[in-house]
Length: 271
Image: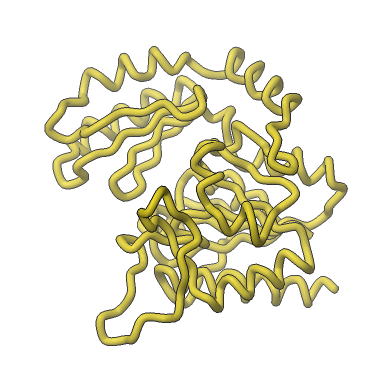
């Protein structure tokens, strides 16, 4: 069995994304990611212990939109719970024992050449609606996809939705996650990378977890799919999803415990 999971706002949380109730005491938690002296991401102690159990009983596969470098900042997965594989760059890169899988890189490069408009052209189209009032910065991740830091309240939603329809016809997807706006080629997706690892490791069953539209290709094909009751997929509602996705009972950082408990339950049912 594989447990393939998104990271940010699924298993790990920043202070901003914790969504803790003011009328409840904060759970015991610890830092799992630092950059210099700055603390970035956290997990509850209970979630860490559950994840250790999961990683002991099955293959734990981190699947993240983070770049290779950004993934390596998460010390928990470099020092304590070290997965044999990791999917980064939204499926554009696969790490095998920390090393980039060059065969997968070749496959992705070929798919991009054949299936999607170039990133430069996509950004040209975006420049027609973008301005400094709502787009604070633009970035290219691992030469595979693009994202912007935005002022969400000032986004021209009608124009952005029209732009989304245009790029959809040109082999790209758009995803709005908090203050980040992503443009990602459809050829670079999480499920294709998970399927490659599934075949390579000869595993049969995949449980998957994620909170955003970029996780949907993975969730819709996995044998068992879980999503928190917060985030982009929750905002979209069930009508936009082609299959049953199991929801957590809790939101924010506590949702990670629900996800991991569901995964353990499925594992026991299969054993």
